[in-house]
Structure formats: structure tokens, C-alpha cells
Image (tube, rainbow, N blue to C red; front, side):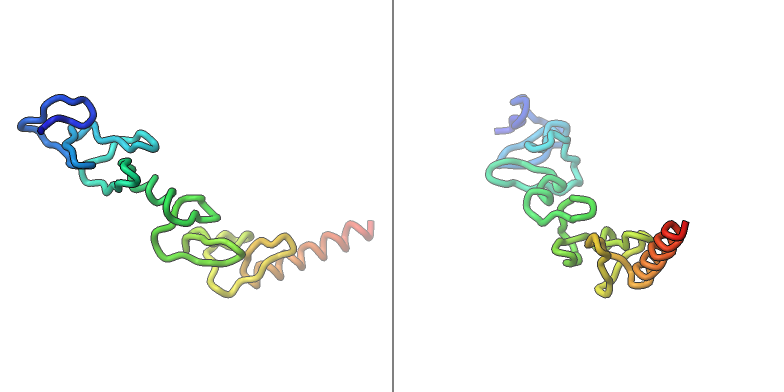
Length: 133
């Protein structure tokens, strides 16, 4: 049957998408979770009988990045009791990406060793200055 899964109108000589065992007008294939239109070239997934866009699929299936909260489907960093996209795992001070070699400050925030010592020295100077007043 050549009916659109959304509007139920017949699909004849126009572009169509096939999903969930049915044809859909190009403008009518929508994500069942967020409602966004799934583009012709976009990947989508079928989960438990529902059509979901790639973004919703990743956010529902994969671990979430502790930095940006999006789903992770590529290589990631496990550190500080969380997972991060490599680009999201940053030094709290300079905001540059961190490698496996990092330290945490007294609040548990990750940073480069050099940034940690700069922060510690700055705190000592400020504490020393304010206590001498």
C-alpha cells in the first residue's frame, strides 16, 4: 500500500521515505520523541516501535557527557567519576582539553597540574594579603 504513514494520503510519483514498514511523505517523517522532522539524508533509528532521530537515539541509549549532557557515540574520556566527550573534558581554569594526566582541586574539579598550582598560589597570596590587613 502506498499511503503515507502520517497523513494516509496516497504517495505516487513523489519522493518518499521508508520507515517502520511504511512509506512517508518526505515532510511527514517525524521523530516520535522530540517531534523534529527527519531529513532525507539524516540517519534515524527505530526503537521499541518508535521512530527517533539520531540525536534522541543517542541521548536515550548512550551514556551522557558530564560536560554538555549529550549522548556519547564516539571515543570518550572516563575521569572524575564521569564520562565526557574528548572535547568536553576541559581544565576548569584555562578551559583547554585535558589528557589523562590531570589533578582535581579541593572541590573535585579537574585541571591541568600547572593551572592547579597557579590557583593554589593565587589563593595563598590572597589569603596572606587579606590576613595581614
